[in-house]
Length: 109
Image (tube, rainbow, N blue to C red):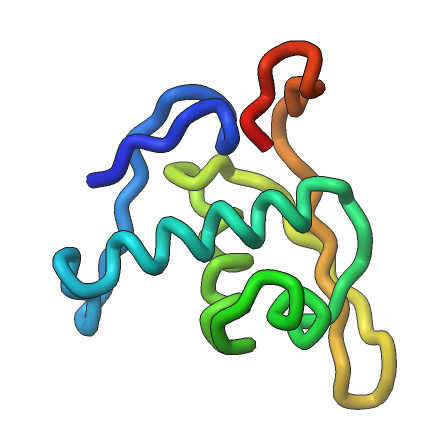
């Protein structure tokens, strides 16, 4: 398990799982990507997977998985809104489920 700080809503333990998940190979990479995606998406702006991927790195499928993670209680239980931008392109918006501290309050993001 990984300990995440105020960035995801207070000190909480999060963990990744799945048949193909190996902590020694995947934990650091997935946690880092999760934090980058959260830092970008916490502003509540609509973005496509491609737009998120170009800012955060990784693959679009990995970004999609991190967005799904945000819905899980152990990752904050946030709401993810979706809407169609074009025929084959979807946009995503993160609605954070708690108040994000401002930099003056000591936020790390």
